[in-house]
Image (cartoon, rainbow, N blue to C red):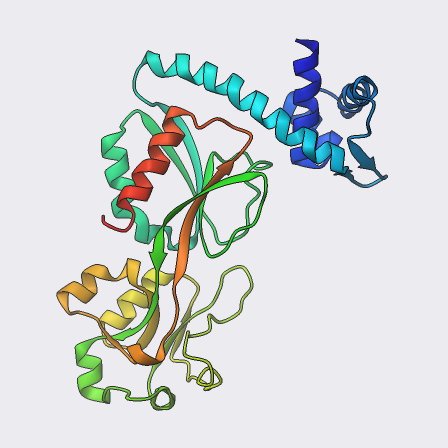
Length: 293
C-alpha cells in the first residue's frame, strides 16, 4: 500500500507538473509529495523528474514509468467501478465545460437529463481553454484540434460554417453571387469572447482578404441567429446550430461554393481516471445524439 501511495504521488505530480498542486489534490504538503517521489526514485534507481526552482518536468524514464503507472491505476479504478456499477443507475454530479455555443447543444443535453434524471449536470459555458484536471472537470466539449497527452478524446462529430440570411433580406438586398458582393451587404460579425478578435469568414484561399462591412458585432452565436432570421443581414454560423432554421426556410445559405470549412467537436476527460458510469453514459449519449438531436 505504501508503494501505491508513492505511485499516486508521482502520477499526481506528473499531471499537475507541481509538487505543490499535487499536494493540494491529495491533501498533504508539497514536501510530503517530494519525499514520496524521492523514495520512489531511490527504490527504482532512476531520476523521474528534472527539478528547478519553478517547475518539474519528466525525464525520459519518468515518462515511460508514468504510462505504466496509469495502467495500474486504471486497473484499480476499473475494479472499483465494476463493483460500483452493480449498485444501480449512473448518478451524481457531472461537471462539464462547454464552449459558449453550448446553448446550441441544449436539445441533446435536455434529452440526456430526461434519460438520466439521477445525474446532476453542472455546466460551465466558456470559450477559455480550461485545465480539465487542475480545475476539476469531469469532461470538456471543445471544437477544433486538441493536443494534451493527459486527456482521452472521443469525436462527437463534425460541423461546417455557412453564410446565411433570411429570404426576406435577400429579396430586398439581392443574393451575393461572389465574395466581392459581400462588401455591399449588411454583415453580422462574431467576436471571440476570449481574444476579442473577429471570427474570419471561411472563404476560399485568395478570397479571404475582402474587407467586410460590419452591421453588428456579437460575442455569442445565439443573437446572430436571431438577427439573421429577422432579416438584419448575413451571418457566418455553424450548421449544427441552424438545422431547424435551414429546414424551415427561415434561413438560407449563400456562396456555398466559395466557403470551405469543417471542424470537429470532441469530448475530453482525464486519461488517469477510469470512466465512471455517469461519465461513460454522458460520452456515449453525446456521441450518439449531439448531431441528431
